[in-house]
Image (cartoon, rainbow, N blue to C red; front, side):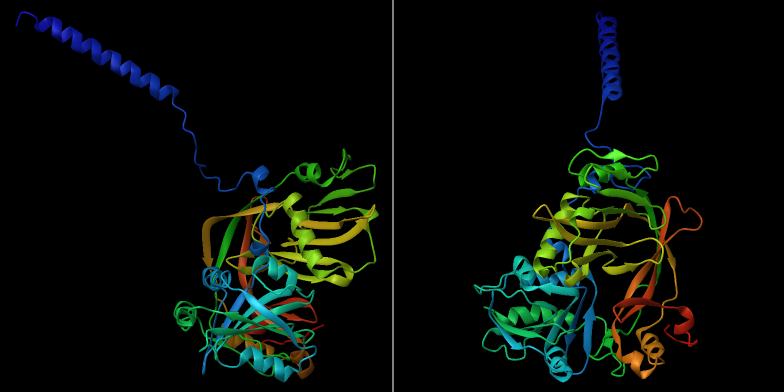
Length: 442
């Protein structure tokens, strides 16, 4: 007991020393990564340089599976990717022109007979682009395009699938073949799950070819998105080859006459290189390759943008914003990256480049909105005149993008709607029309 006081003093000293050490460590600790707090927006600098591979941009937006009685389909990204991942293992061979100008009846039989899966692309896909994503073993790949890919597993007992590539606008059809080592595995992993996908319906009086749409609404939620604008000078530093002059109104130019300005109304930028204007038509595959590379190098894919269509004669191409794998439309705020290609100084270059400068991120806030069924949509379109019904090219669910009225500087809304394409123009089906109101096209 003689040394108890000394022991107490030593223990007390050690405790005080340990306490001071822990306090110093806590005060000077810096975590390697700090999670963002109440700020879901990504870094603008990193977002505008995000690059993507061609297969992430050129994608089917719908797949239909035709059975003996029902047609099941999906616009779900995971379900579409299930088939695409299987296709990545394929070798497509014996690509042959089946018909240069097939009739409507011939296209309908190929696309919609039983035991067929149809992949729908929103724009014409050139074969060299498809070859870059998949694997065509033929030495000479044609420059032709298609917008529907058909997989026929009806006669697959020998382990082969018949593949058709259909251009529904021109009627041109190519056929090919895929040798599968295990057809039973393909049917079990792809075809059987598809039998549980949503039911799709059509009205044969609408469109030249049958147009199938989901019988039930795809989404009944409106979403609130936080948006942030990228400073225009961040794009200017990538778009101009040399030094750019910042003009008093905030726009930019250089000594070649190239001009960059911000469009406040559409929340976008407009860039033009007048020296690159040309009247030469584009080679479709080169237009896709050139423009996807240009976006990778000059602004990036700030959100999910998918190839949506082109006009080779004018060297025009569009990439549209997609949310939840559905296309986004907007009457004021622009959801489209649009490029017009050209030539200057003997080199292919961009002539015109219009794109959104905003980045949207979900806030997690949703509002339930009543959405019409596919049955109601077909009933509404059936009230068009016979001539107008025949001109309908496509019908699909999508979203309308608007600025939030309560906080237009920080928030945007996306609301589910039905859209249809007629005479190369996408139109929204209003609630008035879907409810049985008057329906006329101007």
